[in-house]
Image (cartoon, rainbow, N blue to C red; front, side, top):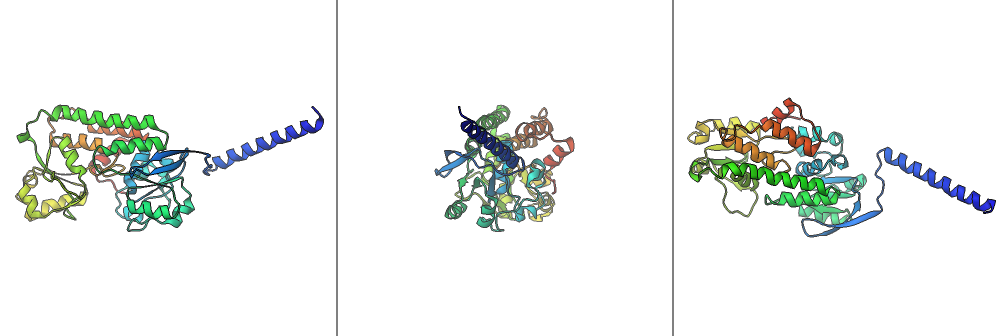
Length: 354
């Protein structure tokens, strides 16, 4: 080999080394390194979406907290490039979103108060994907050539489909299946006990939002039933939410009432229109716990909701159920976060404030 060829080889080698070093430094400074590998996934609208491998940066639009919980459970909270929308921040109740994912602090919100996506901010962030549970957002972002994946959770079983899809997107299929198995096993554990309770001994339960006089989600009927209660609103309906009146609550005559906000407890007890209801007379009005999301709403914490509700409905039957220990194990296993005793108590109280 002549000297000229040797110099060329050495020169090429030096260039390769320098490029590799520069690439490493660029990545170490927090920049997203472009991916040259892609794969096709099918979202929950049946749309085929080509995504990069690996997914390194995402934006969540619409129901931001609930979508974030699925990302947290895969240990991928560091990929989220947006903060909570202003409308959620003003509620002052989403403390644990930022406890579990400190990277959300200081990140810009990327939607309006009416949940419309800010395409300009999203493009500036340059995410690999945008997640949303809103079909109008899908259409809007498609027009801006922003890659968007539609997620859906209407029925209880959808959580497993959603988690499986997220596992495929993040190449965390094994972790996603661990959650699916946990979900099923938790429900089976509770069912083994509540299935023996006669129908006429099961409490009538109302889960609702007092301030809006509405039932926010059909999922409430599901977890009340799985925990051994009889949901007074468990009737076929086309919409997620259901408007109700105080007179209807009196007619239902629930034994237990569950609300999602601490402020609503006093309001329910002080409403003279409801004074004859057993739940009021027997002081059985409860606040649902709140961690990364409101447990009673759709979210990754739904299995914990069933555990909490079963122990709330039947404290003697589930006297051996250590809810604090169950909560610690869940967040450590799926979020990788070791809760303190005080944090667990705060989550279970439903009173955490940001």
